[in-house]
Length: 238
Image (cartoon, rainbow, N blue to C red):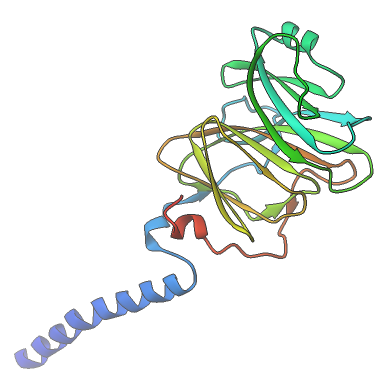
């Protein structure tokens, strides 16, 4: 009896590690790694700010502007900061929007490459980009605050998306590969391109986001016909 119990314990002791290895190998084959089991999904999915405050974890729409007239040719997003909203509005044009976010007053303007406001401090010019459709366009501006271990759902937009990272870092996977963007940098994604965003590094990401989209379409298009491979995680980018 004792010999039988000893043999059973011996078999289990050696079989369990093998089973665990097999389970890990199967997860890796599916593009998963146990090292990232702690990751979570960004909440709220870029909905209107509502009862939330700028800086709350999630992605929120803080301004939308119908654009009646856009310059011909490639477009650029100009980001400038001002002492207050009054000064920012006075310096803007018809395609500019003023938002208060992350301790600063921002004038965000869609214009040609060489446009500049009167006054303010220039932060970035991001582009070029073009609308995905010829119809009426809506500029939807968002603020995003995400922890380093958060991911978005796979999605796309009915127009170009422009990111400007204020703090932290992000990694974006598209069918073309991955792109990591750090604080003070921007990234433009063409309209219709499926994507999945990952927090990166070990600090909170804070970003300003523009989606210039068909006014008849929602800001975010869910469940595109594309499955991300987890390249940001596999490459150690996330």
